[in-house]
Image 1 (cartoon, rainbow, N blue to C red):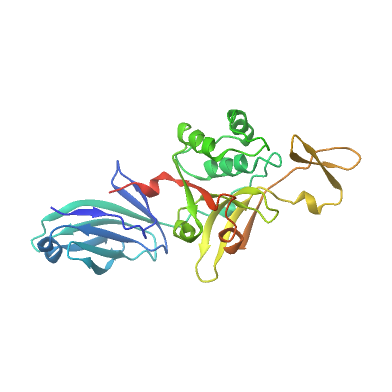
Image 2 (image 1 turned 60 degrees about the horizontal axis):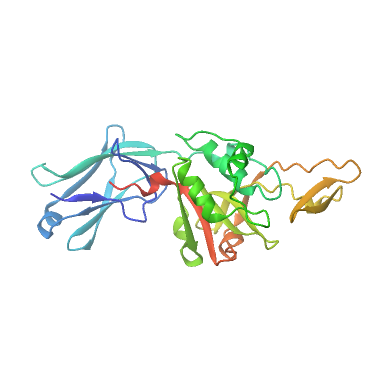
Length: 289
């Protein structure tokens, strides 16, 4: 009997318990099949939906023991994907494919960071709020739980942040990614990214869409508006952390956050000091069939 698998190009969220793969409309999707040479020569694929008909439209041979079936994701559908032989006998357990409209992440309220170093907490608050099966946590509560995770300059320690994310049950996979590999993560939405901001400091945003044609990304930016551009405010330092306050009254600056459409190079050309990007995304993308 053969085996189904998800090629790395398929950015789908797999629910192993229910054997269900969720793909967003318009995303590239292929299902892999591995088996003996005889099995790959006799197998037939079907991705059938009662209201949509057949959606398995092309099959490619990768090598003697591997095939990949392309799935039409042009419109929403609920499909049953089967691998059978000429007699209709199953050659691998079937799975369900749900093709859904992409969530409109840009419709969610952005989250402004609490202070100059809270970009990570604001990004994580937003990430938890827009995803299903997560518990929303305010950035102030996140900061309160972050005891012992700070560097001497007031920034978050990435090693301790990774451990915090893992222990907290956010169902987030984290990774440190080299510049040459970053584009392969486009599609793991929403994607928290740690990078070097134009001012030269480490920063975090959340990416949630990539336009391959124009090389542009949609992003939730917690550092907005930019206090350095507002003449009504002045900056000072507290334990190495910049603090922005209103001239005269001393009222603290309030970030609201915002959604932006930016060039991919804003991120892709600006790794962190160690030469890598810190990323976090839903762990469902890495589940195996």
